[in-house]
Image (cartoon, rainbow, N blue to C red; front, top):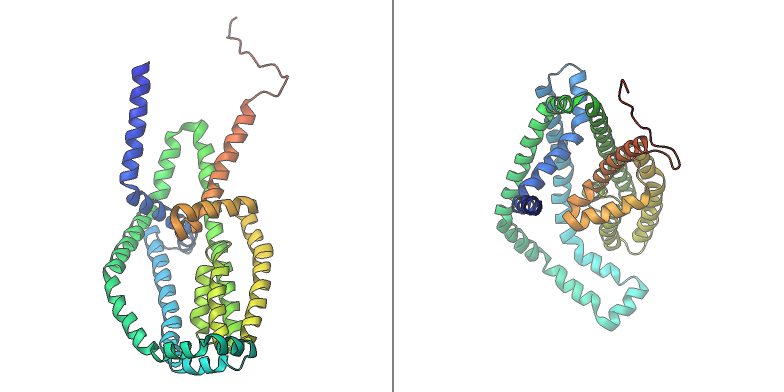
Length: 350
C-alpha cells in the first residue's frame, strides 16, 4: 500500500515537472484552442452557406487577414502624416501652454516651458534614434511571428478535426456519460463564442465613439487613437481606462484644458454605460458570471499571464462555472435529502 502511494506521488510529481518544462508549448496549445473556439462561429457560418469545412476555415482566416490589412490602412497613413505635423508643431504647443495662467505661474517658478522647448527642438533627432533602436527588436518580432503562425496552424487543425475527435470521445464515454459531457462541451463552446463576439462588438463601439469625439475636438491621431481604444477595450475592466489616459495626454497637449475636460467627461460617461449596461448584458447572455467573479478572474488571469491572461480569464471562468454547475447538479441528483432513507436495492428472487 505504501509503495503504491509513493509510486502515485512520484508519477504526479513527474507529470507536473514535465508540464513545467513544456509550459511554453502548453501555453501555445491553449491559445490555439481558445482561437479555435472563438473562430468556431464564423467557420460554422461559412459552412452553412455551402463551403466545405476546410474552405470555411480558410475563408475565416482570409477575413481576419483582410481586417488586419484594413486596420493597417486606417492607421499607418494618418500616423505618418500626423507624426510629421506633430513634430513640427510641438514647439508651438509648448508656447501655447504659457497662455494658461496656472501653467504660466508654475513655469515662471520651475522653468517648465524652457525645458519642454529644449526637448521639442531635439525631438526629430530623438525620433531618428528611436527608429534606429527599432531595428534591434527584429529578432523578437520574427520570433513572435513564428509563434503566431504556429498557433494559427494548430487552430486550423483543431477547427478541421475537432468535431470528429469530440464525437469519437463522447461515443467512447458510453451512453451514460457521453451525452452529459457533450452538453458541457456545447455550453462551453457557446459561452466562449458568445463572449468573443460580444467583446468584439463592445470594442468596435468604443473605437467608433472615440473617433467621433476626437474628430469633433480636432485632436490629432484620431483614427490611430480610436483603434488603440478599441484594441485595449478588449481587456475587461481596465483596458478602456488605460487607453483613456493615453488619449487624454494627447488631448491635453492639443488644447489644454478644454479638450482634456471634454474627453474626461465623455470617458467617464462612456465607461459608466459600458460597465453598467453593455457589458452586463453581454456577460449575462454568454458566460453568466457575477461581476465580482469577473473582477477576480481578470485579476488572477492578469497576474498569471499578463494581458493574454486578462483576455481569456472571463471565458475560462465561465467554462469552470459550467463544469461546477454540472457537478453540483449531478451530486444533488445522487444525494438523498436530509432525513430521507437511503434506498436499498433488493436482488431479484430474494
